[in-house]
Length: 345
Image (cartoon, rainbow, N blue to C red; front, side, top):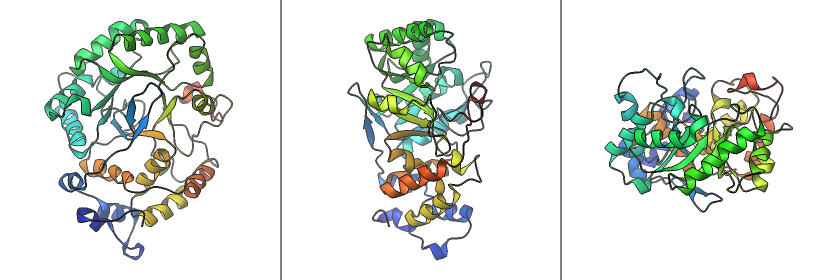
């Protein structure tokens, strides 16, 4: 057993002989909102290169047109003309906050910043206890205007992390460098405590760093065992060298839309060992490598399930086994049109 069980957590202890199919096992493990609050699960933080720290599990949303609810933000994408406030989205975010999620990941392109801001306000949680991320791409040509619009929608004076959502808007190194200079100004003005990028590969990072006066704090990329960014343009070695942290979206891919795959057996084995679901193993695999997973759900049950990833640690051998099995398959869920099918960068 990877952790001591007390109180409500005690009912998580189920012997392997008692487990049925995976769905039944997951159902037996589920905790209610009240019980999860009683556990007082604490999400660890990762120190960033600018002296700030980021909670190592993020709750967020993704544009459903790009992929079915798999990752970040507010779990809900809304079309630009989607009408007024979506109370379902607001309530889901409030539930996440009540459960203990403090890292909330959004983006201007999701069109849900008003809902995220309202949920934060209605939660009545002190601002300094939350870590709020948003991203710019729709208005990438006018970043000063974009951050002001985002802050207005979020009803906040600052965000904890502001990211350039993707590098594919750029037609030259100069475009990347100009955008980053504007991000540095956002940080200097106190509108973002930390600044970073998302979906950047090695060429994008090296171009940006040629003129940067502030190193990006983090690069948020698709990350799971079937996409470990080992190709020639993979950014991870460069990021480690320059102290740029990694956040991983779509961390559950190997246990969801990329099934079946070579990681199936090791995930099932470890789920039984630690009395959690395969999804929590997937999240822990990221966390134990100092990678911040961003996940989402509109269901309270799953939100509480994900927090069980804080109750155990994988061994170095187990981390390596998952990585090794993952290298036997390649699966990219996002930005497929920007890569050769066999490009693992």
